Amino acid sequence: MQKPLFTRLASGLILALAAISGQAADNWPDKPIRLLVGFAPGGGVDIMARIIQKPLSDRLGQPVIVENLPGAGGNIAAAKVAQAAKDGNTLLVSVISSMAISASLYKNLEYNVERDLTPVGVIGSVPNVLVVHPSVPANSVKELIALAKAQPNKLNYGSAGTGTTVHFTGELFASMADVKMNHIPYKGAAPAMNDLLGGQVQVMFDFLSAAAPQIKAGKLRALAVTSKTRSPLLPQVPSVAEAGVPGYEALASFGVFAPAGTPEAVVERVNREIAAIVARPEIVQKLAAVAATPDAQTVAESRALLKSEMGKWGDLVKKTGVKLD
Image (cartoon, rainbow, N blue to C red):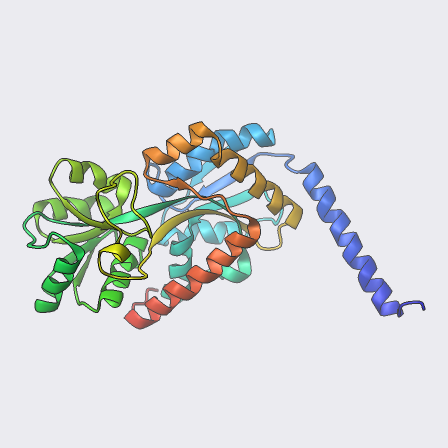
């Protein structure tokens, strides 16, 4: 029995689009690739982009150019990629949890994370570490929680700024541990760390790679890492979940995004290349040097991760009531 005309036309259109997508992947890339980073050179996101820059260029046979467009918590670069041509030649490197936080935190974003961008893959994940000034009379997470409950809003915790992942890592801890601490935002992680070392703030969640030298020098006391399991960089330090807050986890997963509507075959190609790159021993070593663990995921897994992070951090943003213009 012959199929109805509409069904035949729809099937033909699907096949035609699939053929076009396949041709796009076969011919791609035919010009340099731009990797946009929404933060200044030398920061965590920039380091991740530069770790994959040359290997990706070698594998694709085209120059890969890292462009830094700092500002608005990474949203300037994200908006630029969201509005770029849907050809796979302009990609974004960002922290997936940061993207999820921004979606709920900012009132007037120029883009919609889920509508305008599509996850391509994950480079690696970095835990934060919960550190306190040596003057704080707490040698464990349980002791810190007891101290915070005994003195609500007396402990100050610093962050790289309102709405950053380290800010909301602290908010997640306060929410799950049912404590109240006073958030002190800074214009970057460095000034926050300086005041922590000076004792002006008592507590901070910071990238493990940044805090590790101060911990090893005895200038800060590490109470826990924010990953589910212990970090090889500080194997003697427990996870927050292990140390007294069951179920707690907060990772900075560094992901690659493309404009929504980019041919699926191109997205899959980039995903495969990233997975191959982060599996190489020399890349694993470079990631380990910044306390990162390779975390290659399929396109489907990357999209599921974004959806999960949107729910987790979106709920927390609503609970805190924090909003930015």
